[in-house]
Image 1 (spheres, rainbow, N blue to C red):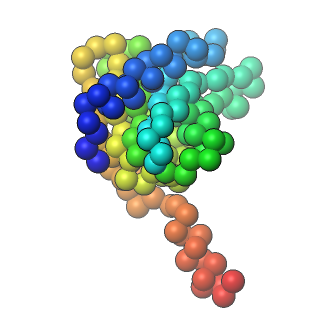
Image 2: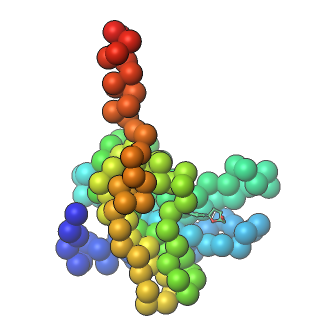
Image 3: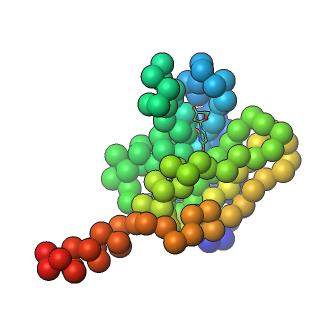
Length: 143
Ligand code: THU
């Protein structure tokens, strides 16, 4: 998917802004994410950690769950910002969550430095398990 430059800038700025609210007292790794949805709106999120470490939630998932809770069902693009010299790609769990709503989503990672990553979800998560696998199962089972 080709994103017009102004929209891309908006998405990246939303991700940068979101990182400011990061709750990451344990890792001290601040992450911001923003998603562009089917309606054309942008939803942002940040990582929210927990004293019970396994319950930490990544920025990408916070952004996507916020969008889904607002009724959005299509993710066209995701931007991730980390205040690091090199860009950070979404973790495996986040790739799976992006796949649910944006199997062809554009995924952009930006950082403090000028280097950036630009790829697509299907490149990050080839042969993904997704909603269509469950549809096939239901059909086969005759339900
Ligand atoms: N984190 C994200 O927010 N997104 C990623 O894709 C990778 C990791 C967060 C989770 C945790 O709060 C911190 O970064 C260190 O793993």
